[in-house]
Image 1 (tube, rainbow, N blue to C red):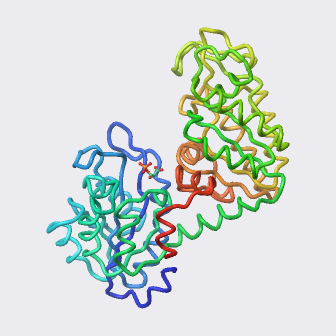
Image 2: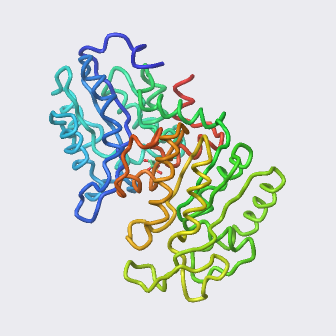
Length: 398
Ligand code: 3PG
């Protein structure tokens, strides 16, 4: 069901689950507002139809009680700027004060509730433990719109249980994200998948599934060192998940059997410490000195990865190639992003899968329209590509 299926929304109270989980710096300033911007079109559709929009979202992982550093207040301010009209902020998620803010809304106005995860009922494991909170949330509204694609893999009160309690529909962002990710399950070939980021263990399920669909798997970032170790190379002080080496050996064998081209870095930028001013140089990937750690793929690897990406007709990229937040280790991620932009211009479908890689392309100054799609989902897009059932989508289909 889409918003159109909800009928006349004029004067209706719409509870809208968005994903506003953005990174903040130590001073509480938003460092990447991509998810806030992505939430705006659906809010506008609702306000233009005269709805009273009650946005609810989470920030970070507080432990079921209020913590000032996880307040959504600064996010509400940014949302107001982007919408061009103020957003009323409810200091609580539910209860009398939230109700008072909702009651004060006029048609076409927007309120944001405080961080849902300040309430233990949001993330409780059992539906029974989430029920009271879900009831309270549902009581604030007449209908529910699910637009937080980044959280649809979570079986949580505001994502799952509320959808069972109110007439509901998927918002435009959720629909777009699913349509784009669906294309990746039947990709135009060659299909290249680029994985980076710190941990192999975060991506085990998706690697297993991608070996069945991708033609090439390019591995960079911190996780590359576990692959290099599985090939028998010394990785010095680089990030290594020793307990995953055997699993990765299995992937390498599986890839060979299936004819999937696994591409690993041939050189790396190796530093003597995890810092921007550490002594660093480029070394072959199979000769990383014992006292150095790889913090980016090297220039030759970046060229190799870029050539592969440009030869592909479909590209999915998740995870930066290095510690891009520090200038000396940003080049691998930059060269790769540029190759995706060129592939897009050449007609390929390119999808940047959420989280750090989405933040990286924006932080490095690449235009969003240089890619077919930049997903707002990190874990959600990976779980979708793993072929898992995502509770927040399944509940909308019921
Ligand atoms: C994300 O950042 O991927 C989503 O907002 C979900 O957050 P979570 O991993 O804390 O549930």
